[in-house]
Length: 73
View (cartoon, rainbow, N blue to C red):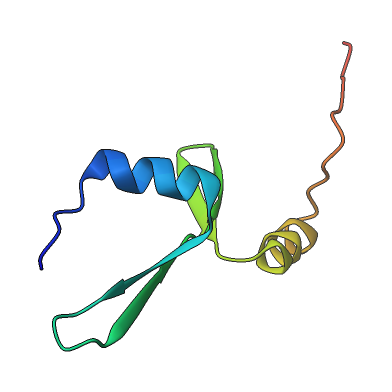
């Protein structure tokens, strides 16, 4: 029995869960998981990082900080 999966169903499911397992016609399971990417935009550039550690390595390499800086002058 084939069941159609809609975009609305997937959006609702992934709002509540991090993964879903679907089964092929032969019974083979296929799991889809939700993964987040961290993106830094600015200065006409965009950088994408798969992990927080990659992001922090980028910040440290380019001597960036997470605290806001206010310059008066």
